[in-house]
Length: 316
Image (spheres, rainbow, N blue to C red):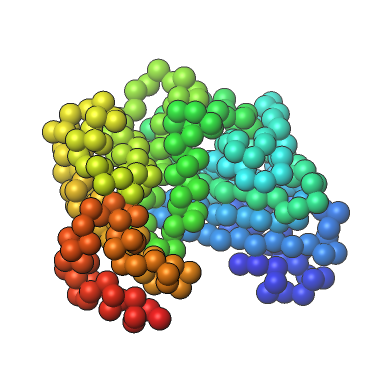
């Protein structure tokens, strides 16, 4: 969705209505009201969604009147990508820079100031239904409006995961998006538990989901390494190979099958990319961790019903 769908004069009002429908009603003000620019992308996931926004600098306030008018009774965790953002809620006031995260609640008044650095502000917003968070509400409420540590530990992992979803969601099918949404909620729960120093332990399944998410991120980052396999993954995460396989027992595919599928998907995309037309089939196979071109060709034919070279010609 974008203000390009309406006239320049109507963009500001259109944006206010769109935010009210997609997130929650707020009042906005902006020095760019007569030439306001904005775009939003909503990624629907199981029990949650991620919304990505880019917009002209503005201020936003949610007052008691807005809450009485419409309250989705949700938490929203947001990740800052661009200009600094000032936020105030429940006696907490923070200034957030790019890479920072914070959480706010639709049921309490709040204010946000998106600083004007002569560029569009950019944020990602993860909706967190209260019922999905296995944490005491009073613990989470203490975090409202506070800057949360997002550059180490579970915060860095969550930020990386949200960025990955933002860029890769259009390549995922509905079933995969549902699973990824569950992982996002589990990572958010682990992150908030650490930030709140909650003594209540996370459920075992949540801990396992977080570990699986860490493993998936590790796999995705190390696909080009031909040595990537169950033993290397287990050693990196300080677990046994047996536990690694147990973690993936309820997943649609094994660890090895996950690695093979992802390598094939990346190779298939590269073969169809005209910018990589100068690269041979064997070179592309090698860059995604296949040791031998013959093994790659056999796996590709089993997965897609054609040879890699045929797929490249068909894409052209």
